[in-house]
Image (cartoon, rainbow, N blue to C red; front, side, top):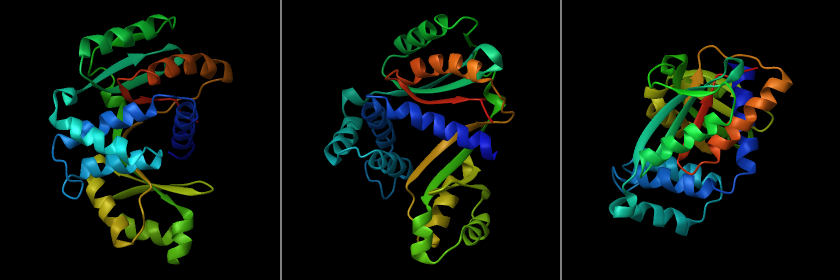
Length: 240
């Protein structure tokens, strides 16, 4: 999973760096999570959404306002997902939060129509091509402060559902089944390790490789999709 996971993370961060709509997306995630309870201490999904917002330097006032919207008419959001195919064998899974699914699917279809050979497909057609995983991010400097090694963390987290541990120059990523999200979080807490980001992701079961030219062409469609206000997460089968 190594290089494929690294590509997906790096490519997404590169696109997010140039996005001006990240705060509204984070706010939607907080609002939807807060529907199940406004107290982060008893609502793990809200706690995670707030954690991710703080990781993107979202102001506290914005976070508080997003939580309050959960009980207002403005907070009537629904979760919807769509699937699509692009050229070069690229498969796409899109998770959205919207107050108007008709608008959302119309916008997505317009992006696909601008990419020759790309199309939205029936829901359920591609879902089996992606495995749902919990991904928790930590900092290597935190390990040093606690006197822990990567091997220590890996051995300890296996008891909490860890399937693999990815490491780069500054961070590490604990990956497990999506149903083990809370267990992995508990594992971090047991080790007194801060969680810098946490998410439920869909990782491709069979990643594909693209030429630089094909990748550049595909990125145009990915950019259009991720810049849409209603799209919270976009997953592809592009790997190493």
